[in-house]
Image (cartoon, rainbow over all chains, first blue to last red; front, side):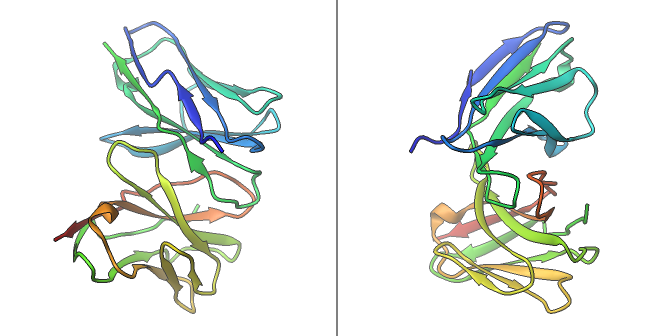
Length: 113
Length: 110
């Protein structure tokens, strides 16, 4: 079956703009998590969604938000982009939140100029 | 969330076993040990996880000490394709939240 897909794969924005990234989990998976990866900070947890509800949130400012739809697809939004938001944004899905393995997508590479 | 400590880098000859250590001395009773790896420019890939018993799957073996304060991931016959950053993560069972550390960069050489 198809893996986790993320769109777009690459994105270039300028400071002050906003961006929306999309994640389609593996069919049947109901849990979606988002991570930010940068060379300086490594992989950092952003948020976790299950059945359209945010279960956990990492230590990111309110400019970072997300949501999950009834079909388990998820989006994350970053408003008022800053240069430091340049990163690889990774989405992961699992069947539910009971400790199943998470499957990661290829990521969206965001560059803020 | 319990923190993990891993060596920054390790080398391993192709065909030999790669033993990657992880220290998680503050782990609590309901936290599991997970291992993921990330090959350059790809998303992390799940390897194995365990609570207190040793675990084995087609990719690797996980050895957890009796006091659960440390563990070792074993790749029995390392190949060049196993070159990656390996992350040891302590995770509560009822959440998908993964706290990644800096990981160990494993270089497998011919």
